[in-house]
Length: 498
Image 1 (cartoon, rainbow, N blue to C red):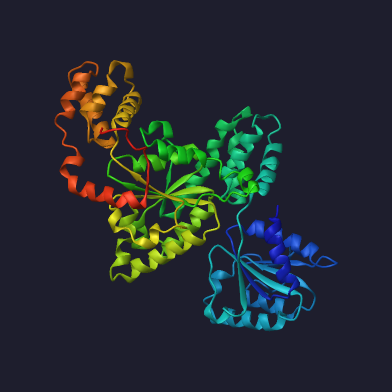
Image 2 (cartoon, rainbow, N blue to C red):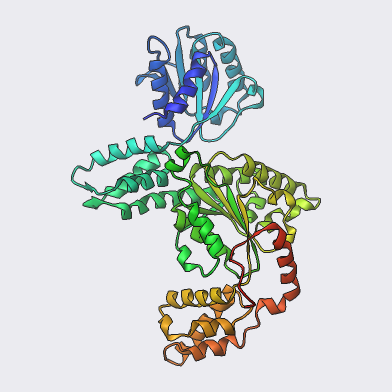
C-alpha cells in the first residue's frame, strides 16, 4: 500500500521533470509500490517503471533488460531512452564512491532534465556525493501513518479467519498509534504475532507491538526503551504535578488535534535529589499510554554512531520515528554543562538539541530531570522549550505518610498495621528515597530475625539515617531560593510548618 501524501510529493517531482531523486528509506518494497502508483497516475497513460538491483540488473515487469547488470550500463540505458519512464535503483548507494558512477549520474541529469524521465535512488541513509549536491533532490520517505497501518492490519487479519477480533474501537486506536514508528514489514510482523497461537485478539495482545518497538530502539544504540512499570498511583505526593499530567493525558489523541490543541512539548523537573523526579517521569508513560525512551548522553558524546553530532541526530530521528513517544533525559545539566565553557563540541550539541526542541513537528514529549539547577543555562529554561518547569521539594508530612503507604503496599505489607501519621512526623526532612530506605532496612532486619515487619523495625532504622536535608542544608536553601521565582511547585504549599 502506498502513502498518499508522499506519493503526491514524488508525483510532483516526476511531473516537474526532476531528473535525480534520492529517497531515504529502509522500505524498498514500499517505495516501489508508491512509484508504481505514481507511474500509473501521473500522466494520461501509464509510464513504465524500471527496477535495478545489483543482482538482477535492470528489469521491467519482471523481465530482464539485457546487458544492464552493472550500474554504468543501467544508467546508460536510462540516459539513452527517449520515452517517459521512471527508474528505481535499489542498490546504487554502495557505488556512489566510484567517480565513474558519479560522472554518469551527472550525464544522466543532463540527458533527462528536459524529459519526463526520472531516476530514483532508494537507500537506507542519506548519501549524496559532493559533485551531485546541485543535481540530486533528496526526500525522506515517511513511515506508515495510522491509516496505512490499519489497512495492513486488515490484510493480516484476513489471513487468520478462525481467530476472533475482540478489539474495541478504542483498542484499535491504541494499536495503530502504538505501531507508529514501525516500517510496514515490522508492523505486519507485529500484527501477525497478535494472531499467532491465539483464538482471539484483544488489547492484552498489543504487547507484541511494544516488543517490535523495543527491538527497533535497541538497534538505535543510543536510546533505551523504558517499560511502563510505574503508575502515577505509585508516586507519593506531588499532587500539583499529577494534576498537570492527568489534564494532558489525552492531548496526543486525534480528538485533541481536531479540537485545535497542540501536543505538549515537554516538562522539566528540578529539585532536591531523592524526591521522586525520575520515578514521576517514568509514570508518565503509563499515564499517557505512550512508549518511553531514555537518551544516554554519554553515548552521544562518545559518538557511537559516527560523530557526536551524527549520534545525536540519529537518536532524535529514532525518537521521531516511534512518535508519539516520551524522550527522557535524566540529569540534563550533565549533558549541557559544557556549553557554558570553552567546549565547542558541547556548544554544538546543545545548540542542535535546543533548535530541535523549539522547532520539532513530531509528537516527541521531552521529559527532563535536573538536580544541579543552578548549572542549567538560561536558553534551556525559556518558554518554548518546555511547557512547564516543576520544582520537587522535600515532602511535607501528608506526603510522607502517602510515600510510606506506597512503599509498604509495594512490598506486600498491611498498611493498616502502621501508624502512618506518626511515621510521617518522625521523618521530618526525609526525602522519598530515604523513606523507601527506611522500609527496605526494616524488612532486612525483620527477615533476618524470621518474623513479620513491625513499626519498631522502621523506627529503629530511621533513627540511624541522617537525611540529605541535614547534610546539605545550605545547598537545599539555595535550590529553594532559585525555584521560588522560576518554577511551579510540584506539591501544594503546606498549611503550616511540617
